[in-house]
Picture 1 (spheres, helix red, strand yellow):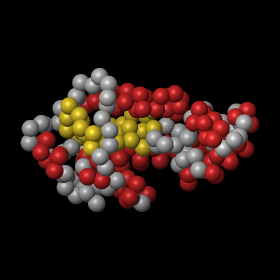
Picture 2 (cartoon, helix red, strand yellow):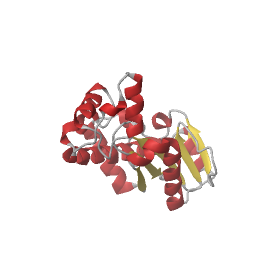
Picture 3 (cartoon, one colour):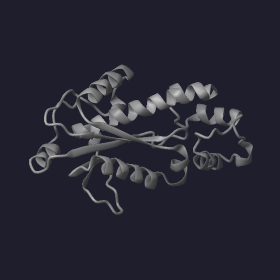
Picture 4 (cartoon, one colour):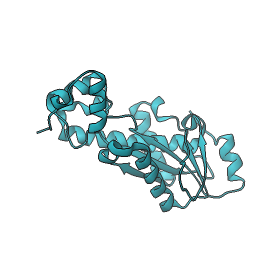
Length: 209
């Protein structure tokens, strides 16, 4: 668990007041949105956090609730239709929306930085969700919101077992998509690409009814 600020956060906070960490959840899924979250680095760390992938559902929920009660958190939902067209561009645009809302002095982003026009000092931190408290906290917020979204989708599309597979296109979800069809929440071009790699005619896929 990360229970203190990282070296880079501590160093930056000596010169700047408002620093935010950013991370996302759902990037590699074939169903559902990407959630991008931002957490403002506080003066005092309110709770230990960790890369969301290392947390149980109970740990995730408890940390999320503490974060929402103690620090400034925001998120943006990137719809599946946008992810299907240009994932990274869409993700970057929603990161920019978060930054315009929060107006930070420094932006810390997990793994990558935004390559095009961006009006904020930024650092892409490799393995940032394992190093930086603010990025790990953002990963918790993003995953909690994403998981909650998938739970609600599961009630709408129960045939796809989205609570357990979270929209990740493993064999189970691929077979269920072949059987039940493509919903508006499917990233259709991604599904078609996988089908082609497996030698499956994309005309096999029908629309969900």
